Amino acid sequence: MKNINNLAIGLSPVHGVWINRAFPALLLTLLFLLPVGVFAHVIQVEPVAIVLRPQETFITAEFSGNVQDITQIPGSIVEPQERTGDTFTESARERIESYINEKLVIEQGGAILTGKLSDVRYDDNVDPAKAKFRMSLRYPRPESSQNPDAAKQPMRITSTLFSYLPNAIATVNVGGYQRNLRPGESTEVDPSDLAANLFTNIGNFMYLGMMHIFQGPDHLAFIFGLLIVAPNFRTLIKVLTGFTISHSVSLVLVSLGKIELPMLWIELFVYATIMYVGVENIWRKDFKHRIWYATAFGFIHGLAFGSNLREIGLPEGNALFWSLLSFNLGVEFAQVIVCAILFPLLMRWKADSEKRARHGAMRWETVTKAASLLIVAAGGYWMIEKLLTLLPAGKA
Image 1 (cartoon, helix red, strand yellow):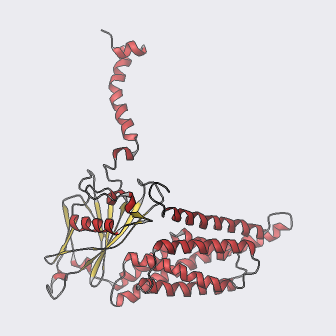
Image 2: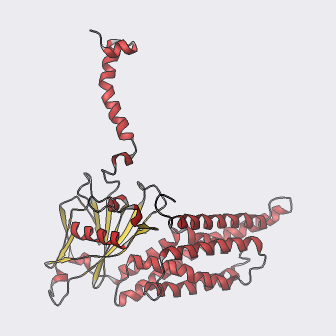
Image 3: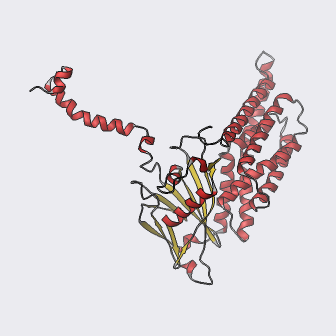
């Protein structure tokens, strides 16, 4: 009897045999190309990274990874109504904290350390398959009164995180050394890697401060709005000095818990300042007063800086002062770098534009208005995007 495939499509037996063999492979290939969502997150999108940062009396563990890893835990799924803005409700946070403490066992000196969730955030404006989460837990060190030698003993870390995923990996980083743990695996950390180091803290917090500027398009947009209409370097220095002093004050107040505001509203205020700067650039011609509202707006931006610093977790004792100082210096250093690069380029562009304008080219005033319009649009977009997170799930 002739092969059915040959009768159906009129091919030779050789071709029919090739199709019979190739079809299963082709089908498997198509299945693998289906969207990941079809499989309801049965694999880990990326390893969960855990960075341990030792302090004098506690250890901060910073977690990051795909948000589905912490929202789709069997028996503890975070429902849509438990998402508020870019974080979760208290009940969802408690379940996540309980899961981490159960599945990531940290032991030192015969005592099991229990972590307290200090903050958890996630990207609320992208595809869930690509959204990241960032989470911090604080683990108090064993009390020296109960075990004086506890700090001298190695720390044992055992992970069974996300064991329901076939390819789950937790990447633990401490003291510059990285260890990949599959569910059920353990590792030991040398006590020397857990010693709180003042200079390491200073370097870490300065780096974090710099990254907060370089990776923050909202703050960069605000600074650019100040730069593009600054008439000269002297005026720019005055404006940035007022901005720096005020945001340094609010950064410290928020970091120490003296001011507490929801992060959502702080971000909305920041976006409003960006829009205001852009609008004023368009309709004003005299910016002599700018130092005063740059100072006022700096206080608002400092609230955002301080809130992010609290999420990271501050050390105690003498290291607290140095960490606050180094984070703030990192912010300032990044701002200086941005201004030192952009302002000379803008001044050169301005001079060239004024020369070309005599021959009918676009005037510098038109350039600043167009750029400022983009700043207003960016601030408005971020504000609307954030306001949409206030809508009930499914209506945004």
